[in-house]
Length: 111
Length: 115
Figure 1 (cartoon, rainbow over the protein chains, first blue to last red):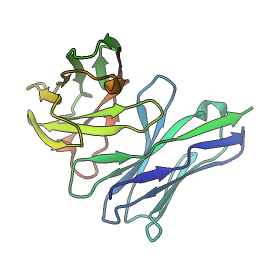
Figure 2: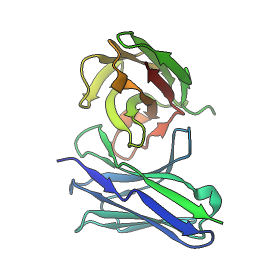
Figure 3: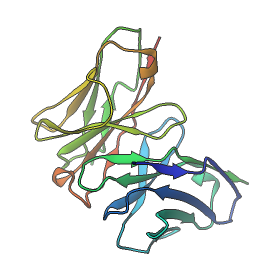
Figure 4: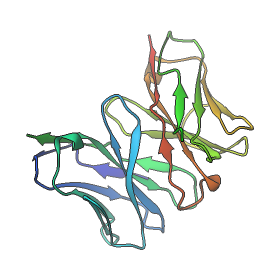
C-alpha cells in the first residue's frame, strides 16, 4: 500500500546536526520531497531527490536515499532555532499525479 | 512574483452547510492540487486539476468537488459539511502539467472550522 512513515519528534541543541528520517513504500522511480511547515503556515519546499540518486546536498541540507531499505533522511547542519518546525517527507506515487505525505516530524531546537 | 495565494484565510461554518475555497496558482503554473491537513497530520491529497479537468482524485467522497478556470485559478467546494471536515485546506501549484520533475509550491492554506 501507499504509506510514508516518520518519527514524530526530534529535539536537538542549537549548532548540532539534525537528522530526520522517513520510510516510503513504493520502490518505483519517483521523486521524494522534504517540506517544512511553521506554525499556522503552509508548506515550504526544502529540497527533493530523484530515486536514482543516493545523495543531494543543498547548503546546510543533505538528503540521503537508501533505495534498498526505502529510507530517506534529511540532515540539517548547524541547526538554528529558526529551524524549529514540522518537517514532512512526501513521495510522488509513480504513474500518477498523487503525492503521499508522512505525518511529519516536529523538530525542536534548544538554545 | 506572487506565490500561491488562497482565500479566505479562515472560515467558520456549521454542519450541513456548503463552503467554497479559492486558490490562485503561482505565476506561470498551470496545475493545481488540493490537500486536506487535519490537526497533527500530514496533508492528504484531495484532487488535482489540469486544463480545467479533474485528472486525479484521492480517497475523498463526492461531497468534495472542484473547478479550474481558464486563468488556472481553482475552487474547492465541500457540500454537506461534517465536523470532521474541520482542517487546513492547502492548495499547491506546479508547472508544465505537473509532470515528473515538476515541483509543487504550496499556498498558506484556508483554515476551516465546522461547528
